[in-house]
Image 1: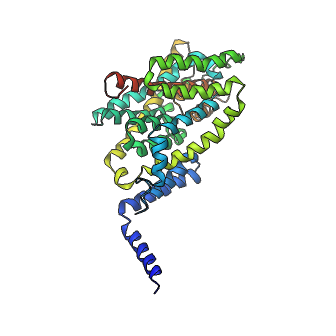
Image 2 (image 1 turned 90 degrees about the vertical axis):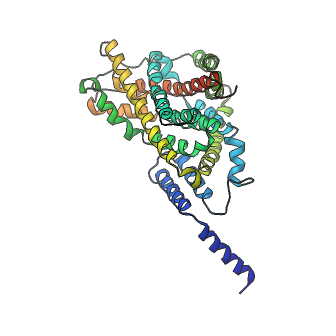
Length: 382
């Protein structure tokens, strides 16, 4: 038999024999992620590359995350440097319309309330023995904002990037299943049938739309300087959108730039899901705590909505409080659908969009505040 053929067959046998049970299990998990993204449509833009990246990194002897490996190249250049999530934030800002929030600014309070679950989960994680930086990375899953979770974990807990990212995007896609039971449990039928007045239809001036991202960047960055890159990139993208003079940059930010970075970021996240690093008890705890964080964010948002309902004499439908998380605009649509179930005359979408836009800002600021607090405590460097 030809020696080259013999060597090839021997290599094949070595590869098959080298496949560990853990690697086989992770390849199966990766296939589940691909199924959820392709067949079920759950966050396909990230779950598909994450799933495929997880397959690649668990191929025995391929060493794609080793020094000089294909995935390691992009991981070092884009994830460890924090560049990929920040570039995605520019795209998010370019795609986000904050006009509903500017028309109804008091609703931003719901966006702030929707972040309380993050801080409660932080305490739970610390109580369970997580390192302070690891606990922050886990808690930020509750923001229901994938790029924020990726940024924080890649910067301060890179060994948890795979678990945190998978949890964040999986739960984002499951918002229509997670939120409604909580919304129903915490509100009465009478509250759910409240018809809110029409959202203010007066147009927001172009000047106000341009000034808004500039003002938010300045004040939020001064308040929480450690999170300035998060805040600044989101608001830069929004300024590109609202300025009206850089359409090419805006279009690039929300299309080509975001698409390319999302693909590479997804592959890199999948690349962190190596069997020996991912299959740990800690990973299961991350998934459980992430779920708790999102449930708590939803619950606190709804409870704050109930408080606003009482203070306004029943003019606020508490359901819109559930949209105070950062799953934009999915959570707002969930609120609209729930409201319609109990009162066909109830149109909560625009009010919920205001809360959802507030949640977008709130999640970034919440992460920035936690990072700045850690810096003040000397846990992270300046």
